[in-house]
Every structure is written in C-alpha cells, then in structure tokens.
Image (cartoon, rainbow, N blue to C red):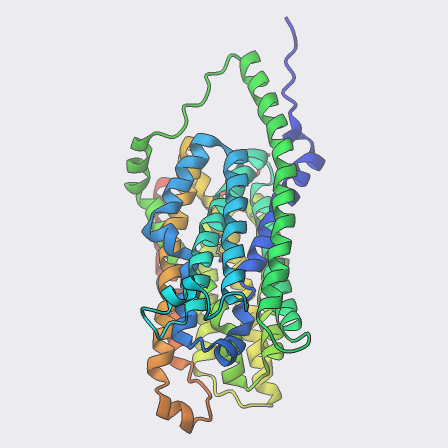
Length: 471
Ligand SMILES: NCCCC[C@H](N)C(=O)NCC(=O)O
C-alpha cells in the first residue's frame, strides 16, 4: 500500500507565515486609508467647513452599506461560496473604487462648476457636497475593507488551525495597528507639507492601497497551490468534500446564544474604540490644549501599544487559554481610559496632565490587545467551520451597526453639549466630557457580557478558556 503524505504548504512554517504577512500587508494599507482623515478633523473644519456633526456622519458612512444594504451579510455568503481568492481580490477592487471617489470628493476638481456638485448641493445644505460624495466613497470603501477583514480571518483559520492561530490573528491585527499608528504620524506630516491641505495624505494612502492589492494577488497564488494539495490529500484519504454554506446555517448562527453574546460584546467594545479613534485627536487638542501634530502623535501610542501586545497575548492564548477572562479585563480597561478623559481635570501645559493622558492611552492600547486577541480566535470554537465565513460576517455586521451609529451619536453629543454661545465663551474649546461618558458606558456593558460569556463557557465547555495549540 502507498504511504500517503499529509504534508501540505501549511506544514512549512516559512510558507504559513509568508501567507500571513502577504494578507496582513493588505490590511495594513487598508487600515491606513481608514484613518487618514482622523488626525485632520480640525483642518477639515477650518478648510472645508465640516462641523463635528458633519465629520461624525462622514466617519460613520464607512459602515452604512454594510449595515443597511446588508453588504456584509452577502460578503459572508460570497466568501463561503466563492472562496478566499475571489472574495479577497473583489474586496481590494471595491476598496480602490471607494478610495478613488473619496479622493476626488475632497479634491479641488470637485467644485462649484460641476453638475454632480450642484446636485449634491441642492439638498441637506448644512452637509457640504464634498462631505456627501466623500461619504459615498467611504461607504463603498467600507464594504471592501470589511469583506477583506472576514476573508483574512478565514484565511488565517485555513492556514493555522491546530497551530498558532491566535498568534497569527494577533500578528495580523498588530500589522493593521501599525498602519493606524503610521497614518497618525504621516497624515498631519503630508497635510502640512507646504500649504496645509487634506488632499495630499489621502492621495498618498490611495497609492499605498494599490500595493495592498498586489500583496493579496501574490497570496492568491499560494492559496491556489494549497487548495490543490488539499484536494489531492482528500482524494487519497477518500474524504467527503465539505458541504459549504446553506441558508439554514444562518438560523443556526442566530439562535446560537453564546455566539450572539460574543457579537454583542464585540459591538459594544468596538463602539468604544474605532469611533473614539475618529475623535481622539480633536479630543486631545481640546482637553490638553495640544497642537494637531502633538495630539495625533500622543494618540499614536494607542495603536503602537496594541501592536506590541496583541501578538504576545495571542501567543499566550495559544499556549495557556483564558480567552473569556481576557475579554473581561479588556472591557474594564476601556472603561478606565474613557473615564479618565471624561473626568480628569487636565491643565494645558501641565506635565502631570500629559502623564495621565499618556497613561490612559497606553491603558487603552493594552485593552485593545486583550479583547481582539481573544475575541476573533474564539469564533471557530463557537460555530461549525462550514459556515465560518458567514459567522465572521454576521459578527462584523452587528459590530458595523455600532461603528456606524456611534460616530453620529458622538458628533451630535458634541454639537449639543457645545452650543455656539458656550463655544465662543470657551474660546472655541469643546467640552468632551459627555462624549467620553458615552464611550465609557460601552466598556461597562461589554464587561457584563464578558462575565456572561465566561459563565456560559464554564457551563457548556466551549473551550474559550482552553489553549488553542493542542500538544
Ligand atoms: N475601520 C476599520 C474597522 C475594521 C473593523 C473590522 N470589522 C474588525 O473588527 N477588525 C478586527 C480588528 O480588531 O481590527
């Protein structure tokens, strides 16, 4: 009898980690694009007249189509039906189209003599036409990045199941966080290179997105080879092919209590992170009296902290487990950080105030390592792998609802808590306390859900507290 070799590309650690780096680079450039305007809120207000409410609505548009046209739901089905290569490339193309529209919208080419400009100027006049078109572009881009996100999660499960899965997910997120940190440095730099201008950094990030497309393309060559090795192996072992996604699987997902608790924890936790990221620079400018560049560089320690710790915590989860406990601690820390920014009596130019702000940002970075490192590798413990793509897409869909809603809520809270006369009396300095209390409350609710999840895991043994690597 012939001896069957079980060796595939995933057994080579060099190839496995190379695959990870290629897809992680795609996410690196995508995350850079997401936050390219985040450090420039003040410049957008000065140059383009985008008030906090306009800016908040624009920031939330990234998630609009995913939530209200259910794009993420379809993305999950496309991923489970069409596979990683098709879905990944499609997501890159969608990101490029959306990014191009956003760039055009904020550029000088889109001006008053343009028919589309006039059309967009004919309704909701308090929302500038450039912000409207930029929001459309960002909404399209948002479909692409979320589709890429679920594709990359499934890719990691494909290459790393039974191996260093949490470490790989942690490393992928660390590379994405590096993208955010980098953009918080380079965006104000490019904006201020010459006459201050918001278009320059966006153009640079559009170019970088093209590199992300290329790295994913190279990955598809590896993916194709792995699929052919897997199908040869299945034939030799006489295994039944996998059935793939069925509509009935959706019912199974939505009635899976522990999966729904995880999704709700995800929406509340991330609502306190990504929407905060959009307002953080401006919050630090207003609370500490910092310049845009200083505020942006201070905030960049948040993704840097998360970048350093996420892979370490992923490694810890692989070896020691304790995933549900990590979710609880991470939620407590997000609360601590936001409460600090809500109530600490910061004084402009005071070194203690600066120390407190740095500490709170680092605490947030630690939190943002604990939760993602534990959350995403927990999904394969809770659902069947035949509909894993859809499982990730539904969690992202629920999460996206929060990510859409919260920038709008925060924009409105900021406008309402800073009426024009108060703002003038405060020399244009915004009061951020009510907005930060909204973010802090998300941490409390996420913590309660974390405790519930841990109790369910203890009762039913999903393995959330178990290590991933089976020795
Ligand atoms: N603005 C980028 C949002 C990406 C959200 C994505 N659904 C996600 O949660 N990714 C995992 C992470 O921790 O970044």
